[in-house]
Amino acid sequence: MESLNIFNIEVFKTYENEKKLKFFYLAVFLFLLFLGFVFSINIGDFNFLFYKFLTNKYDETEKYVFYNIRFLRSFSAIIIGCGLGLSGAVLQAVLRNPMASPYTLGISQGAAFGASFVIIFLGGGFLSSLGEGVILKGYSVIIGAFIGSITAILIIFFISLLKSFSRNTIILAGISVGAIFSSLTMFMQYFADDIKAAATFFWTFGDISKSKWIMVYMLTPVLVISVFYFVLKGWHLNLFGFGADFLKNSGVNYKKIIIFSFIFVSLTVSLITSFVGIIGFVGLLAPHIARFFSKGDKRFFIIYSFILGGLILLISDVLSRKLFYPSVIPVGIITSFFGIIVLLYIIFKGYDRD
Amino acid sequence: MIEIKNLCFSYGKGRKIFKSLSFAIKEKKLTCIIGPNGCGKSTLTKIISGIISDYSGDVSVKNRNIRELSFFEMSKIVSYLPQKIFYDPDITVIESLISVLSKDFTFEFGPKQKKQIEKAIDRFALHEIKDKKLSEISGGELQRVFIAMSGVRDCEFYVFDEPLNNLDIKNQIDIMSIIKSFSFERTVIAVVHDINMALKFADEIVFMKNGDVLFQIEPLKVSEDMIKKTFDIDCNIINAPKNEKIVLV
Image 1: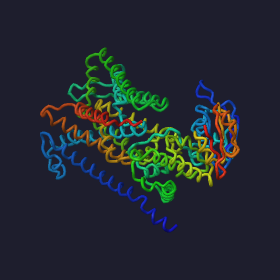
Image 2: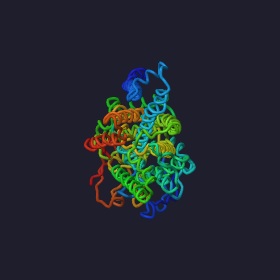
Image 3: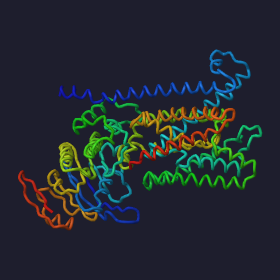
Image 4: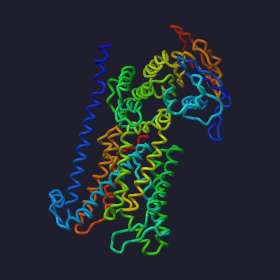
């Protein structure tokens, strides 16, 4: 018995060492995110704003630029990216599908359709004449986006979990769902009057400059609660990977996790889409980089996807402001471009090991 | 004891699997279920494990009707290994075992779970592969990991649906020996396709056909006629040393 115990001390050694390494990666990602944030605030026509902010040496104009333009934009980029990254990670874990993301499953398109419907038919918002994008009247647009996204998610859920189709079928279904919602949105735009159509057309390319403080206030608590929830449920998310039959006998309340994840994804995606439009592929890109570092441990997969999503969108936003300076291109174009490259990589790597 | 009374079940409006099945499985024994494809073996294991619940009739485990048990209580009594199991290629063997034992809202495992995992790694001889990813190990090792994931749980009943799938003869014997060792303290039900494996290891063999139990018998009493009736094949049974029987087809 004594000798057995000595032998067993080694059992968790490699696991513990790997865990330390994963905490180190976490620290590195957080540091990079902070660096990116400072860098993103500083670039532009007013230089070194962050330094001035720290030393409190700024005039009124600089203060306005700092809080309402640079800080808002950079912080929005981070939380939108975090939200999309986390949504992608949760969908991939729950649906056991490495190609799942809010964009590839048509959830973003569903949200855009719901929001457009409310604007065009119910008068839920209008296009600002000052170029600030869409001004929302109340919360009706967000509710419309939520209904649209939850509809998309339920279609996907029905196909993947109830009918237990293969992974490829789910993605094909997601592309179809996205295409249907996109065409319905275009159909409405075609018949809507110019101002309303323009208001909804703005969303085709996601643009972080349209973000508002109200979105930050609404999205941040959702994200904070969710990231804690999913990290603490990380081991249970691991069990989703072994298939439905194993999961059902494991004693895990998987229905609760599925319902929570669907509500979280719908809420996050509809909030993001209502304000800044469709930003594709961040939800696909972040989990793939995260998986490379987290390996099979879903706790780290969740938190890495969250942070890397923010980092990716922050970098993309900086690129969108710098690449064709002085003109600024919508960030959705940048993320789609890099996202497609990653999607091709996934296809060539042959990730589908069903 | 697992008691099944008047079990009726069909998938949707289609094929009727069980018309009225009644039989009992003894405790602390290894019961092997054999029978032709589509006879309802897998469905039966799913019903016993609480995966399928839209059946009529009664299934009771230790004199408790499983309809009255929550999914959580059920998971404490019956540990089930499905026939088809998927896996995340990146997860390691030890992480798989931790996942199975993880509790609600805990970031890490406790000393009790740690002991259980250490014991399982010893019992299933996983020391050499414990830190490898599931995509890096062989089919036999993978099957051993899956059995360990089922066995690491502290349950009274273990239900294995075709644990010997796609394994070579050495691995089949290894896995069956492990399963057999389980049945000294716990009740084990295993669906197998190889009659000889059932004859060698089982305490009792259940012959199923068309959703019905034809025979429930000790291995030594199995006759050629029973196999003929179950599978519609002719065969010879020869007596081997050590009081064993071998079926030649």
